[in-house]
Each structure stands twice: as structure tokens, then as C-alpha cells.
Image (tube, rainbow, N blue to C red):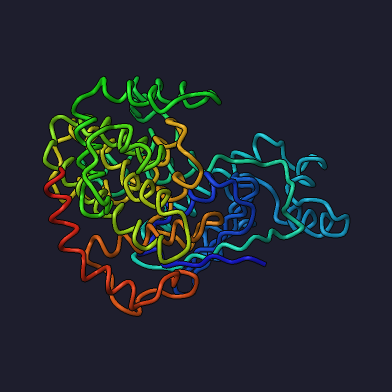
Length: 423
């Protein structure tokens, strides 16, 4: 049995639920605080059943009060479904105890009630295990996690009017846009389309790549400045794009194209964009150093480091239309940039390793694939933000020795100075 646990103070409940949905998880998500436990049973990223120990949220009493189903019928259904080895919800429907649409509506309403109450918790823990009781698995109910989360946040907001309504309204709007896939993700720029078309062919030449990039002189200048920086360590100055592409690799070139394209996406926040890009490049250089010591592809690590915060640029553009205090905007960006970045990466058809690094760079314990790559970006981000301390990494996050990481930390100021001269 596989298990993932965490603190709801570090990873919010909506984030945990959306993680289960986007990764198509199957299992039981338990959230607990003091003596109260609530469980969401999830199959293939859909809610199939819920339970709670809290009075008013218990299945039997809720069905009895709201659904007008007799407690005796529920007890019989539980007993008989167990005896026959069939799902409890399936038995309710097949035996005519309740119509499927009504059952779905009841479980959806109960799920929203349970989740809305949990949103009021100041603390708590969650635990996801990849096991579902036989009495529940493969039932007829399949609820959208995004819809349940959105409705719960909406209910929570309606009972908390006056406690920063502007920020709450924006959070609701953003959550809805993300859950429905309607957030304003910019289309991949023309230059990336052209590069992709060329690279899809087996017989493309470096000269074709050079010609496309040279159509943008600012981009050309950025590529040459990065490749000639101290942290690419070329033995002599590189003066041509062809040399730069050969030296850096096509993946790195494409990541610089992507970042360059996004740099103008939030024109009303130019300094904030530059701040994000500077951090991203610092993280890319640090990740490259970690990767060289950890035995993974340094070029891939550079790409993941450079792109890990791309969701922030999209959110800055989104928030430019909302008059919120800076601290409220910062909170929204911190909470949603991984999800939005993943959506952009998926839209722009980035590789799976890049998408994983973007989505899980703050929660590497939740990732199931590319764990070492994601750990590299997690550590690089800690170092780049000045939050790394010796001994803070545990388990499979310890991919490089503390001594080597300390050497990288000691070089951080020099890296920052170099990046400041580039951006």
C-alpha cells in the first residue's frame, strides 16, 4: 500500500484535491483534525463516495434527513451489498432504494458540505492511500473533484462575507477558470511553432534553427548573453547562434524562447516579470550545478529550472485587472502558480519531465515520476530563495551531499550578480 501524507497548512485542501484529479488517482483521501476524520473515496480522479465522523455529516443521518431514505433501508443495503460483494451505491440503485440521479445529487451535496466545513479548519493533516474498500469501488457515482471544490469554496465565501471579499471573489474566479480550463493561457508564440515544425523533421539542420531565431534580434541577444555567462563556462567567447545552439543544446534554446515570449505577457507588471525571470535563471544555473553532481542531465535540469515558475507570469496578467493589495496578489500567485504553469506547459506541449517539475516543485513528495529531476528543482528553488539549510533534506530528497550543496550556496551571490547583468 502506497501512502502520501502532509500538513494542510503547507498544502491546502483544494491543492490536494486537484492533485488527485489531475493525476487520475485511485484511493482514499483522509483529512483529519483533532478527533474529526473525513474521507473522500476517489477512483480515476473522480469522487465515488464520501464519509465523515462529524454529526450532521454522517451518511445514515444525512440520507435520512435530506434524501428521505429510511435508516433501516441503508442498514439493509450495507449488509446485503457486503454479502453479495457488490458496491453499496450500486446496490441502492439496482434494488430501487433510490434513483441514481437522486443518489448522485445527495452524495455531491454531502461532499460539498464535508469539504466546506474542512475549509474552516486552521490546521489538520491529510493522508492518501491507494486503497478503496471493496464495498465502495466501481460504484455508479463519479463526481467531478473540480466542481465539488468550486462549489465548496463558493459556499464558504457566502458564509464569510466581509472578510476580504475582493480577494475571495478573485480566488473563486480563478479556481473556476482553472477547473474548467478557461483561464487565459497564451497560445504558443509563432516562433515556437516554427521551431517545432522544423524539429519534427528528421533531416532538419542547425542553420534552419538559426534562421528562425535570428528573426528576433532581442531573443538572439539573450541567447548569446546566457551562453557567454560565467556559468556556461565556455573556454572562448561564442559569437554565433550556431555555436550557441551546439554548445547549449536545443532544449535549453527552446526554454529561453519560451521565457522570452512570456516576458511581455504582463505589460503592466514589467518589474515583477523581470524579478520572476531573474529568479528563474538563477534557479536554472543552480539546478544545472546540482544535476552535474546528482548524475542527471544538466541541460534538462537547466530547462526545468528556467521554466518552473512560468505560471506566475500568466497570473500576473490575470491579476492586473483586479485592484487587490500586493500581499493578496502574492498569496494568490504562491497558491496557484504551479497549477497554472502546468496548464501552460501542457498547452505548449512541453515534455513530461518539465510539466512534472512545474507542477510539483514545491511538493516533490507527491510526484510519482521523474522524482530525481523534481527533487533537483525543489532544492535549486530552496537555494535560490535563500531557504536551504544544512540537514533540511530528508529521504530521497538527499540526491547530493550537504557539502556539495553548501559549495553551491557559497557561489549563489556570484550567480545572482551574473543573472542581474543578463536580465
